[in-house]
Length: 114
Length: 112
Image 1 (cartoon, rainbow over the protein chains, first blue to last red):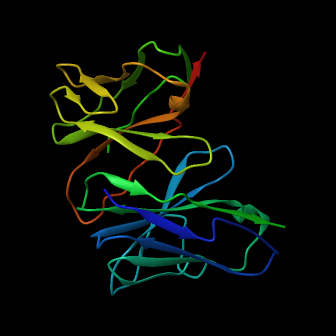
Image 2: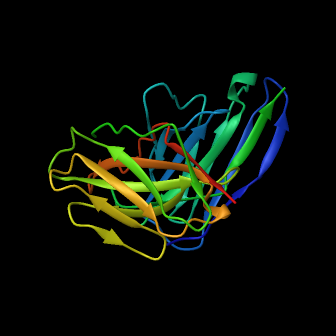
């Protein structure tokens, strides 16, 4: 398994601003992912963070709104840009030790946009 | 990836076995059955996965029917800390991406 930390754990932001969420893993991992969980809903994959190249986004998510970086095998960031109240969600980082196998999730970042 | 169907909610008495069913009638031969759970305000936690044989680990047992169209997650002695939403997910291994597709899951309430 892997130990995953996220910063910040929660934040309250104003409309129109941006927030960058950090995900740190205690060991090198092959796969890193970012998910969103809207209030009362299940998790939805935003993108796969690729080390050294552009992230792969799922349908409905775009790089301009959710830019992602992954400079190495233990760290990734997700930025939520030009926020609106609809972006209020929990954002979760997950990692996979091998492609397609079990994933381990961070504790999440609870974002409220006012 | 195949779709899964789970009951919306279930109750279980503390100390008793919790049996959580999952239907995945369109599962293909190379797809695995995964179970995760999400305790309130935490990230999802991996529980167990299997292909065709029954599996057991320190957390739970996974029983997969012979035709693989359904499965049951068993928590042998449920505690209050097992109260969570349980997700059954069917997916292939390998490939360039490993994303999990979460359904609505089963909300398990363990009661004293």
